[in-house]
Amino acid sequence: MARTVWDSTVGKKTVMAVSGLVMLLYLVAHMIGNLKIFFGSGEFNAYAHWLRTIGGPVMHEEWTLWLIRVVLVAAVVAHAVSAYQLSRRDIRARPTPYAHRRRRASYATRTMRWGGIILGLFIVWHLLDLTTGTVHSGGFESGKPYQNVVDTFSTWYGNVIYLVAMLAVGLHIRHGFWSAAQTLGVGSRSRDRALKAAANVLALLLTAGFIAVPVGVMTGVVS
Ligand code: HEM
Image (cartoon, rainbow, N blue to C red; front, top):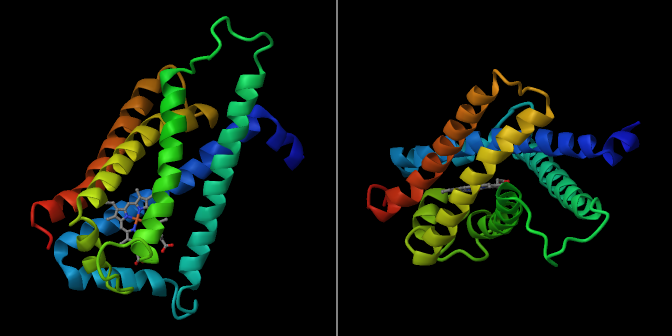
């Protein structure tokens, strides 16, 4: 049964929609959490510490965080694998090749593909930058994310990488949220305008909320 669903195009699109919504929930929480940086290092670092103790005393330190990480990794893998397989299927579905050798996918499809690749690369960079400190520009200190974030946005390339990624997040969510609603059957002629508006507002709020942090550091509001 699960195999039949996974093999179908609708099944893969459903996997994309559900895993996308899981990641979207995480992003909304992450964006709101990041805004605590405007309340100073004490509050921001305390919030990062709290992330490691969620669920206590029932859960041991970092157990809940690891649970969240496992769910997120599963969502990212499911999303990427189904996206790849759907795009292969899309190319194979055409019985005769196009007259022009290269087939041009629609604007939305191209934006989603490239946006997805940029976001995948960004997540790797972001983890190496602010979670492990491997590529971090300053003296990375785990448990001191406030200073780590300020260091990242004190370099030109840190700002460029994050600003490009944040724009990709906005564009990806704008189209992805809309597509997910269609796949999950929420869309209808009367609701489509409202869904499009909701996708635009959500994308705008997330992008603006994330971008506020580097802009805060660049303008000296956060230092
Ligand atoms: C300006 C934008 C962003 C800032 C300032 C930021 C900041 C941070 C910081 C400080 C951490 C480390 C938290 C800690 O170890 O306590 C972190 C972790 C993380 N961020 Fe971001 N982030 C941003 C955007 C994003 C975006 C757009 C994504 C996803 C596309 C993302 C995904 C993650 C993930 C998956 C983790 C690892 C969580 C964990 O397992 O501990 N972040 N972020």
